[in-house]
Amino acid sequence: MAYVNAFENTVEYCDQNKELVIESTANLLCRFFRDDEGQPVPGFMGEISTLDGHSVAGDALTVNVGSYYMIEMLFVHPSWQRQGIASGLLCILMNKISGKAIPLISRCNLANIPSENWHRKCGFKDIPDLQLARIYYNPAVHEQKRDHTLKRLSNEERLRLQNEIETWYIEIERA
Image 1 (spheres, helix red, strand yellow):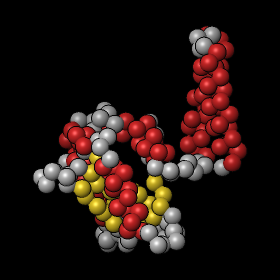
Image 2 (cartoon, one colour):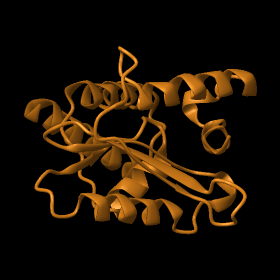
Image 3 (cartoon, one colour):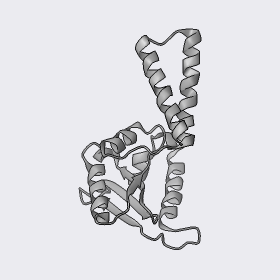
Image 4 (spheres, one colour):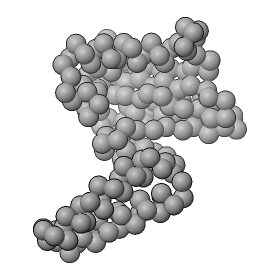
């Protein structure tokens, strides 16, 4: 239920009722614990933080993919957010893989700005992704064309938009 509480108001589930979020959560968690043939996922590590002794404050699930570890899911119950729980879970995961010569990789969903900010604060770096770069680049170019006609942006906003376009163009070229 902590996962549902953490994600029910996010972009991924914003138009679903609570029952659909719960069903989606159950399916998602089953996929984390079992592969397509129903076998346990190798290299699975999970940590649950129950700070009050009665409820889940946060959870992190990590899979060994062979050449790297992937944080498949990390969440914090809304009542425990902004108290260092996610960073604490990350420390637990990093301690579990310390001494191993393979990297820890994570990802965040589009439009989840708090998650994106947390990933950057924790030192995660963006990996070039052509599809993602195009997703950001094309609307920015469209907005620039709209502004050329409508003249609604301030000079500062135009400069920021131009910088964003250039950033995503570079990512497209790198990928």
